[in-house]
Length: 214
Ligand SMILES: Nc1ncnc2c1ncn2[C@@H]1O[C@H](COP(=O)(O)OP(=O)(O)OP(=O)(O)O)[C@@H](O)[C@H]1O
Ligand SMILES: Cc1cn([C@H]2C[C@H](O)[C@@H](COP(=O)(O)O)O2)c(=O)[nH]c1=O
Image (cartoon, rainbow, N blue to C red):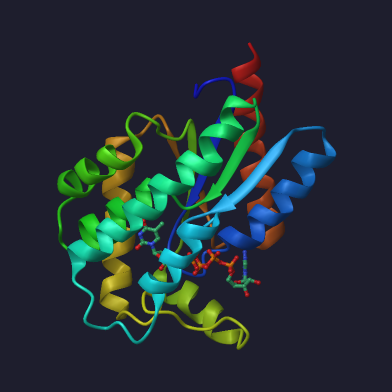
């Protein structure tokens, strides 16, 4: 367990429903009296949101893979120092939309930089702080990309615009990450309805939060 708080991350491919379900879960847990801090990566605080704009900018097609991995790690470092660690020290439950596993799957596996190499730059950024629990939303990438395409208000960013083959490698990368951390990561079937996914996520989170009390 991290300090006195509890650190939960949500992971998965584009359009898997992470943001939508996270918002439902935050409402339900807050109504049940849990003290929640909800955040996202890359971003969550001023400097990291600026780094997000650079990484996801569609104009920067020339960005080198290692530069990309280092920028995600830099954004993560600042986010951790300014927001995640203080919240955990304050006994809060931190729910974060993506964290280190996204770097391992996207940069480590899909970009081909190597999961061990990306893990090692992230260890420099975050030290020993790993999530207590991770929910991996598993979904066929083509379905997630179709979900996003249906909604015009969501602007396609530099990562969304990658090929379907890249997004299939991301899914494969997440499967590799699950093999490394089978006790921490729970796979959620994100092809179900929003209501069912929210209910599955709530079940896993509640079990984990309750066992932390004992
Ligand atoms: N279970 C679901 N079934 C069908 N559509 C869904 C489901 N969950 C979310 N959606 C819709 O799919 C779209 C993408 O959802 P959302 O933004 O939550 O995904 P995401 O995983 O956060 O994506 P990204 O990581 O790319 O930002 C939204 O329009 C949302 O309303
Ligand atoms: C943290 C993190 C994210 N990514 C990718 C995953 C998505 O394509 C974008 C973030 O956009 P979202 O709409 O907020 O999901 O960035 C990554 O490649 N590596 C990471 O470490």
